[in-house]
Image (cartoon, rainbow, N blue to C red):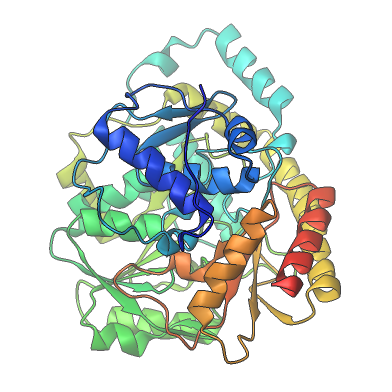
Length: 483
């Protein structure tokens, strides 16, 4: 099916904005029905005589707003349920989509093999240990242990909790017992579970910019969320006090998205803040602590806690695969008793079979070997990124290197408006077939970043090959120099 869209070159709106609005209006009016397949980006761009990236931009905006769904290896389809509170005659601000706050959440809805996606959230799935995973699964099924198909402990299987506690004691220096471990299907579930543990009416301090999924969950729980400023050491405890916060969500090992590694003195300051009043807690998200490339690994904040003020949350999404929906909380003793009183009626959310596979994967030494292999591969990509940025983007400053799966680069705006410049650079890159992630897209919606923050981008390298990294940074150098 072709779409006859009249494009007006003299219209001040971008071509992709015209395509987006035309398709959106047809969906709202019912001319395009729910479930109807749209032409591919390649087909529509050829039909309209525009670049494919122009159509891709339009489709991505439609997907972000919930009008269409992008299905991998299948194409674009009109959603059966669409937003109903839209006035189709209003003037749409597509500029906002150039730094979309939900870009990280929707980045996997559409995959275009012709584009180079510097996603900071994706990992290298080509290195997943498929053969080992199959071997463990086969052995578990051959032994015919029927108990793994029964409903298990809501807190998670004891054997896996013992394995996780031992692993965290050895690798992150945590002080924890298996009884303190709560296993759940992903960090989202565990963060929502905290409402039953911490109660209502919490005021949570979060660094800004931050991990927006956690921010959205706290807002959905009807918690008050306060932006807390950062310096070169991370979250500033004085701001927590000034904002009357009783909870702080921190990522001390590698703050997302800035990449700040919180030094030892600042960690002690946060613990001191938590100890200054009853009912204060720190939620430590240790999301990619396994990947550090310079110096020795820094122990977790929880390992310094002597008063039961740190709630530790981690997962295997970065270290193994996002689809391994097994995350874990380490609860302080006083909150563990609250959990057992308030949450004992809940069923476990993780398959016992998956828990058994993971336990065997760790206990059998496979996980340690997998991590060593991944660290080596990611370190090579990390170092290549730094080298190429220094060579091809010499006007950029690198931040947040030495750990994690992305680096952060910024450029002096030289008197221009930083936000506008960031949006323009994002669009130039996308038109050239490269996806970058602007820092302003990671800020809280109600608290945009200051104009003093220069144009800044997250450059994720984990899911790309070394050839793709080189080609992508080369393209960025070309379009940003011309732009």
